[in-house]
Image 1: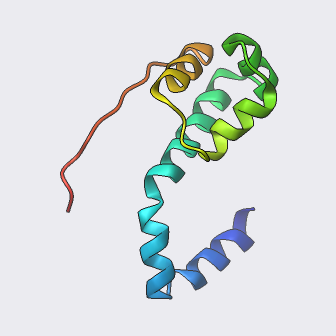
Image 2: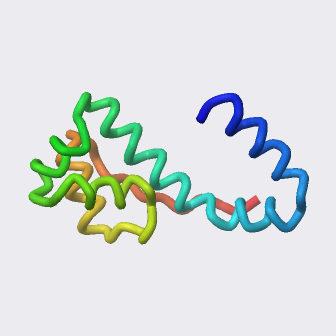
Image 3: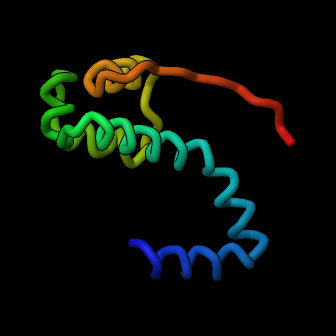
Length: 94
């Protein structure tokens, strides 16, 4: 990922249609990023999170991809498994 990804993203973001669609997906990207950060912070593997959630590693991988969007129940289980607290907020649009 790293540099090549960022370079490609920067190039694609110059296209207004791509930028609009990318920005529309921001909540999904945020969910995926926050889940992965919580797991990394807890020092757990996907398999360990899955065991704590009572599910499979592949289900955790799907949650971390953000597609399909996880349910509130799944987010609560993931938070508990990673010793985190689920916090949902709405902020004013700019």
